[in-house]
Amino acid sequence: MARPMRDPMARPYNFSAGPATMPEEVLRQAAEEMLDWHGSGMSVMEMSHRSDAFGSIITQAEADVRELLSVPDEYAVLFTQGGALAQNALVPLNLSRGARADYVVTGAWSRKSEREARKYCDVHIAATPAQGFLEIPPPQGWSVRDDAAYLHYCGNETIDGVEFDFVPTGFAPPLVADMSSSILSRPLDVAAHACIYAGAQKNIGPAGVTLVIVRRDLLGHALPSCPSAFDYALLDANGSMFNTPPTYAIYVAGLVLQWIRRQRDGELLGLAAVAERNRRKAAMLYACIDASSLYVNRVAPAARSRMNVPFQLRDAALDAAFLDGARELGLLQLKGHKSVGGMRASLYNAMPEAGVQALVDYLGDFERRH
Image 1: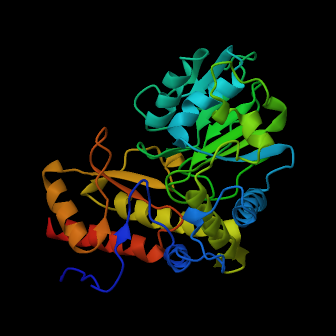
Image 2: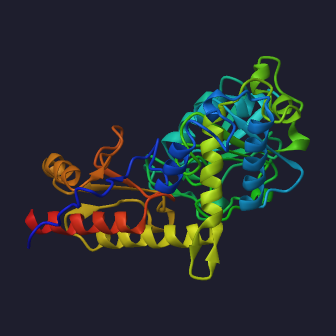
C-alpha cells in the first residue's frame, strides 16, 4: 500500500509535550494584532501593565478562567511567573506553614514536587505505585496524615502518561493539584481543591505565565523566606500585578480562553465540547496501539492519560526510521522523553482530530511496512 502523502501547503501537526501546539486561529489573531492592539497604536508587548488597555486584558482573562472552570468567588485567580516547577517550591512556601505536607507520587513530575517541598517542610509520601509509574494507587490504601497542611497530587503526568480519572477527596488535609498538562481539557471540580496550579504551555497558552487558583482563607501565612513577588496573598491583593507580570503571555492565554469558549461539538459548548473531542482523540490513538503487534502502551487502562500518550516500538531498532518517516509527513515532536524513551504523542486541546487521524494512519502504514 502506498504511504500517505503530506499536503505541502498544510501546517504540520505538532505533538510536542510543551511548549505545545496552539490553536491556529489564536496564532493568526495574535499576528494580526501584533503591531496595533484594538486601535491603541501599540503592541501588547509595549503596553504598561498599569494601563487601562492591559487592565482590560487581564480582567477578561481572569473572568474567562472563572467562567470556564466555575471558580467560586472565595478563590483567588492568579497569573504568575516561574512555571509549575517554581510552584513546587511556592506551594510549600505559601501553604505549608513550615509544618507537614503529604504527597502522592505517581510520576516524574509529582516526584519533583515532593523532592522540592522537602526543602521547606516535613514531607511524607502518602502513596506511590509499587512497581513503576504505570498506575494510580487506590485511594483506600493511601497513608495520609490528618494534620498535614495539604495533600498534593499531579492530575496528569506528562512524561509517564498517567492521569487521575477521579478527584481524591475524603481526606482531612486540603487538596493541592498540579494540573499543568490537563487543566482546561475537561470540566474540573475546583471547589474540591484548596489550590490548583498549572504552567500555561500545554492548554492555556505560551510558556511564561502560570495559573494559580487558591482558596483565599489559606492565604497570608507565607514563610518568611518566600519572595514577596511570589506571596499568593500579595499577588491576590494586587490583581496579579505586585510586579510586572508576563503581559504578552497573559494576552495570548486570554485569546486561548476565548477560543475554548467558542468551541462546539454537536450540542456541547465550550469546555464540554473540548472534553468530548479530547476523549475521541485519545480513544482513537489507544485503540490503534492496542490493536497493534508493533506498538505497546504499558500504562494501566484506567490510568491512561488523554493528554500524553507514551508508546514504544517492540523493536527499538526501528525508532529512528519511525521518527524520520513521521517528520516527512509533518508529524512532529513524537520522540519520547529521554527518561523513558520510545515515543510520545501529546493530544492537547489545540491538536485537531485530523492530526490524530494522520498519526493513526502513519502508525498503521509503518507497521505494515515493518
